Image 1 (cartoon, rainbow, N blue to C red):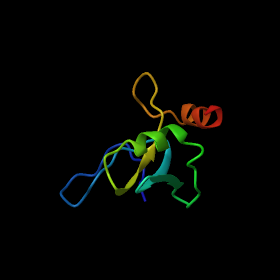
Image 2: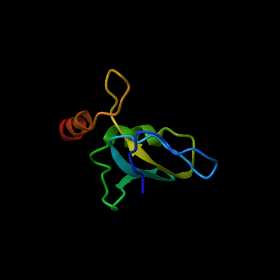
Image 3: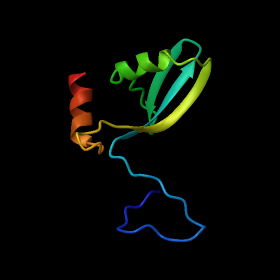
Length: 90
């Protein structure tokens, strides 16, 4: 489980990832069908209609894209409040 720290540990035995403030999700592409699920398995495709449309434009027959859905602010930092607003205002 990711843990926020002031300074990353050093050495070859560590891997690091940027902590984005958003919703971890999976985009499932299967032929022409695209669905987006939360990490708890909820289907949020209706909440992410623009992302569903964008995924339909990918040149793949099937794929699973796992990542964090975010909205970036002017400083290009993930903004959770802006994401919630985007979801509720659609």
